[in-house]
Image (cartoon, rainbow, N blue to C red):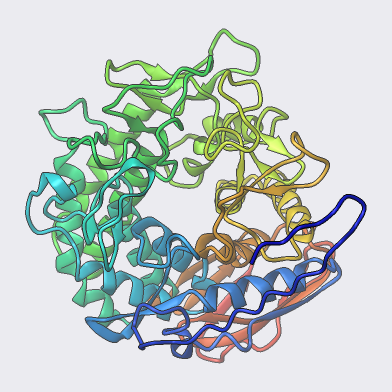
Length: 505
C-alpha cells in the first residue's frame, strides 16, 4: 500500500502480524523450557536493579532452551535470537557454566548434546578433527558474513577446552557421577585434540587458521575478521594463538587431571606437567609493553610470525582465575582490566579506547559484550580481586537498568552516548548475555563446590556489591537452599540441607 504524507501532516498506521506454527520442531524456541525448574530462583535485594535483572535473565534463557533431536531428554541453550537460534559450542557451554549455581541439568544436557557431535575424522571443509567439539549446528547450510558453513561446523579453537571445564565444574556442583563417568571417553578424545595441537611440530601454542577461505577467519569468541588488532589498529595475521585460548587450555588440563584422578584413570600427572609447560609459554610469549605507560600487559595474541600482538583488549580478563598467572601477574591484569582505557561506565570494552582501530559500536573493536564483562568479573573474583570484581558488576547493573533488565548481546558504552546503545543486529535474547545475571552471584558469593565431599565453600565479597540481599533457589548436589547477605558481606545459609556442609569463610 502506497502511503503519502504531506508536509505538516501526520498519519497513524497499525500493522498486525499473525504468526501460525506450521509444524513442531525440536529446534523451536521453548522446546526445552519444560525440562528445567527455575521457579525458585529469585532474589530480594537492597539494590533495586538486581531482582529484575535476575528475573529477566532467567526468563530470557528459559525461552532459548531447546532439546537434542537425537535425545529429547537432553536440553541446551541456543546461542540467541534471531540469528543464532541453534546449538553453538562455546555459547551454549558458557551459558550452562554460568547457570551451575542453580542446577546441573542444563550443563549435563549441553555436554551430552555436544559429545554426540564430537569430531571423529579430519575434514578440512568443516574444520572437523578427532576429539574436537563443534562450533555451530545448522539445519540448513548458511552463507552469512561471507562464510559458508555446512550443517555442522567445527571452526572454534576454544570450545573443546571449555567442554572439559564444564564437565569438571558440573561434576563439582553435583552432576551425578554415573553421568560424568559416561562422558570420560569423550573427555579422553578432547584431551587428545588439545594436546595434539600443541605438540612437537608446533611452537607449543594452541592456534587456529581457516584452511578453506570460506570459514571463520578468527575462531575464538571474537570471531569477526577484524577483531585481533595491534595497538596501532593493524589487523594481525593468522595462524593466531589467542591469549585466552592458552589459559582455557591450562585450566582444562588441570581440570581433566582432577577428573581422571577422581575416577581412577591414568594420565593426570602428565596433564599437570603439560599445563605447567603451557603456563610457562604464556609467561614467555604474551607479556608486552614493559617500557610503556601502564605496562606491562598481556597481549591479545601471537601472530603467524611469532610476534606478540600488543593490542590492549578484554581477552586478558579470561586468563584470570584459570591458574595461568602468578599472584603478581594477576594483580597487573586486574589493574589494567579496570583502567580507564578498558572499563566503561557500562562494562568492559572489547578493545581499549586508545587502540588505533577502536570503535565504540564496532562488533569486537570497542563495543561491550555482556557475557565478556560478566566473565571478567567472575574471573577477577576467582583470582581474589573482589574489589575490582565488584566495580565491574556495578557497571553491568547500570547497563541492565538502561536496557530494562533484558541485556542484548552487545552494545556501545558511554563513549558513544550518555547511555548504552545496542548494536543494530544484536541478538536479544542471547544465551550467555542472559546467563550473565547468574554470574553476578558467583561474583558476590564466591562459591567453591565439591559435591563428592558434600561440601560447598562460600567466599562472599565484603562488603556486598549489592547491599543486603536474599538469594533463593541456589542448588548444590541436588539440594536447594537460600543465602542471605547483609550489606557488609556477612553471609548466612538459611536452609542448608542436613547431609551437606555449606561453609562461609
